[in-house]
Image (cartoon, rainbow, N blue to C red; front, side):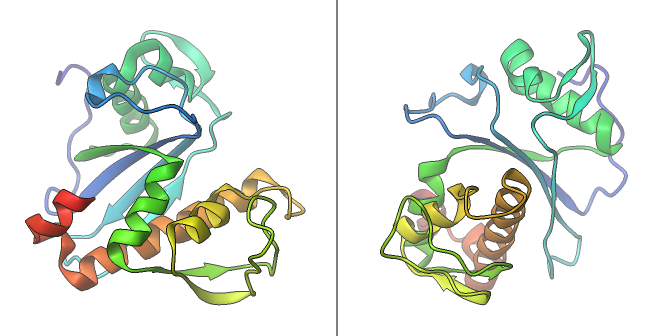
Length: 197
């Protein structure tokens, strides 16, 4: 529905809205049926030259204007109006058009890591994840080689002094690394890899 959508300020660039759920249950196969609050909200921006990836997170408890619903926490847009209302809300917030949408359960981070053969990320803090006690992530650039490592990296919040904020930064690092790897291996134009994702 094009009602109340903003103009596309950079038609050759891509803005991808990433909505994440920490639900342990399976997500609906039809994106239009997703109707729970989103645990993670990010916008991935890929410029027209396709040479870089920028990630912006929107904290799930941010109070924003939700079209037709007033001021509420942004993650309420998904539960009250599905993906369409969430897109309109985020577009109003950033002042630009969303081109694509991906709804991921946290388990998807693991599956994507396995398909791409590892994801390289930046790590701000050395830490031992609470869900994978045998792992230890050194500070600096590191490669998450398995889906299990990736899940532990993007879920962790208790090991950090600012909890959810570092968790969001780690998710940004992961998404940036994932998209960069997809660009590097040509996954966005390779139907065999896309089918596995």
